[in-house]
Every structure is written in C-alpha cells, then in structure tokens.
Amino acid sequence: MKIGVLIGQPKPVSGFDLTLYNVKSCTGKINKAADHVYNVISCFGDNKTARERPEWVAVSKYGKAVRANRRHRFLWDWICPTVEEHKAFLIDLINETLKADITGVHLECIGFPSEEYCTCQRCVERREENKLGWVEWRAKIVNGFIEEASKLVREKEKSFSVTLIPDPCFGKERYGEDFRSLAKYVDFFLVPLYDVAYLHTYWVKTLAYDFYKQLEKPLYIELYGGDPRPMIENLLAAIVAISNYADGVILATHDVRLSEEIRDRLVKDDKLQHFLEERGCESMMNIIRKWNEDDVLYEPK
Image (cartoon, rainbow, N blue to C red; front, side, top):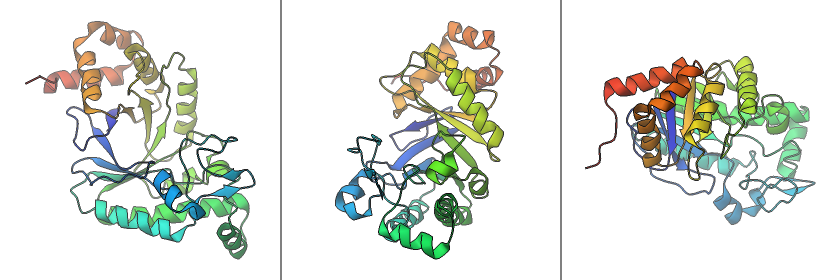
C-alpha cells in the first residue's frame, strides 16, 4: 500500500509516495501548476464560473445544481458537462498545467451533479440527436471528456487519474461515471470517504470493498485528516479498515504541517504502532518502517 497527502501548498511532502495539490478547486480559484506533484483540477464543480455564467449551471425540475438548492444541499455549484466553452477552458488548463514538471494530472468533479441533471435545452437537444437512453447518454458525455483529457496527459507521459463520487452501486446511473469505461483512460481511481471523527469504520470498509470488487484499475481511498481533524487513533482505524482493499491511502490534510505531524507521530509513538500491529495492519507498519529507515522526521530549524 502507498500513502499520499492532499495539501494546499505546492510542494512534495517528504516520505509520502504521492502529493496532490489543488491547481483548481471547486471554488474556481486557479493556482500556478506545481512541479513534482499531482496537480488536481476540479472540472464541473466551480463556484466562480457558476456566479459569472449562471446560464451554464446544470438544471433539473428541482432547480439549479447550486449550494442554495435546498433539496440537494450541494457542497459546490455544478456546471453542466455539455457546456463546450467550459470544457475547452478545462482542456486549456490541463495543457497549461502540463507545461510544468508535474508528476500527473488528477481530475475531480468529472460528472453530473445528481441523477436528474441536466435537463437544460442544450442537453435535451444533444440527447435527442444521439438517440441514447438517459443513463447511457450521460455516461457518454463524461467518458468523452475524460478520454480527451487522458490523451493529452498520456501523450506527455504523465500519470492521469480521476476522483469518483463514493457510490459504488449507482455511480453510472446517478453521475454518469461508468467505472468500466473510465478504467480505459486512467492510471488509478481515487474515492474520498470523508468523516471528521471516524468513530465507526464499518461503512468505510464496506464502501472500500465494494469499489475494490468493481474497479479494474488501482484504487486509492482518500481519508480526511485536516482541521478539525479526527483523533489519530480513529484515523488509523479507518486506514486499517481499508488496508486490505486499497492500493493506497491519501490523507486529505490540506496542510503540509499537519501531514508532517501525522507522519512524525506514527514514527515516534510506540502505542500507535502497537495499535496497528494488534490489528494486523502490516501495510501501514511497512510504511512506518520505511519512514524510520529514510529518517524523514521533520526537524525544526
């Protein structure tokens, strides 16, 4: 098992196999591409564009796919995936990102916001032209964009990956995310399983197992480790729960310092290591042993 971090600073974190950095978040803010890390781009989750181009927001009989929608309470605003101008903007951003010495490009918010979206005039007309059913047509829209993005990234011999919304049963029906089709274009999938406490981990284990049984490419599970962060014992319990099913765990700390604190506590705290040993989590123990061998601990100047 590999271990990585999702952070808000453009620098690799010592000891971690992967560092993911937000070049464009769902807020719409765009940062400069960062060398030697995975550059993350939020595609159709984009609050800024939704404010500036409200006619591009995905719609349904239940209203626009925005945070103010009381039925869905979306975490961010969603742009309709058939807006060609927005897709062209994303492709340009990917090309600009590839000019840096990056490790890879990672895309999130790649699909439709929910099962009833989108019914804008543009979507209605395109679906009628394609003569496909609702589910298959939406999956075709998502696949087409990911195929185009993947080709650009792989031509530069960089890694390409995407985040899946954590529904292992109805991802295609609800969001247009056809796991089998998408597997042709990615090097790995990332699934976020967020909790601010992880007091119970049976649901983490169940979802990880369900994705593990279906995905045809490596699976990375993203766990929340930011502020306010879970007790480290609870975070470790979540890691134990997924360790047999995931090829890697990504700690979403959003902060280099927090990432280093977690790493250093695991190296220094015998009780935490005993916690892992008792539960037979050899994959995490191997990571800690490597940290020890490589002497990656942070030393204040």
